[in-house]
Length: 146
Image (cartoon, rainbow, N blue to C red; front, side):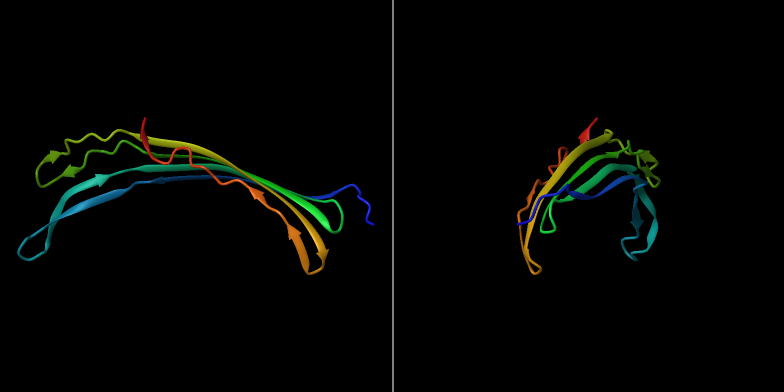
């Protein structure tokens, strides 16, 4: 019979930050209907976007005996996505600007996931384990006007 002893613990923690800014430049070329040659830029659209994420990951495994251990882990993530107010596209061939107004859009969300996994080794090549885990839920799936 094996005796329980003070568990040995292995653990790790990771913290991460990401920030991206994109210009999102897109243009519509004007072409000659007969030759297909580009004659200039009909419209130039700018859709600058941002993305920022903070995340923390951690897990620990407690070894209660040389045959039984339990792993516990978690992950928290917070993100922010947005589209800045686009500048009205230049319409060089018409001399006009775009009459449409697009509002600034932003979405923020956060998720937490976890894991619990007990494991028992019957023999060197035979292990029985259980795993209980959550799935992430996106709290702001779509951009919404701010």
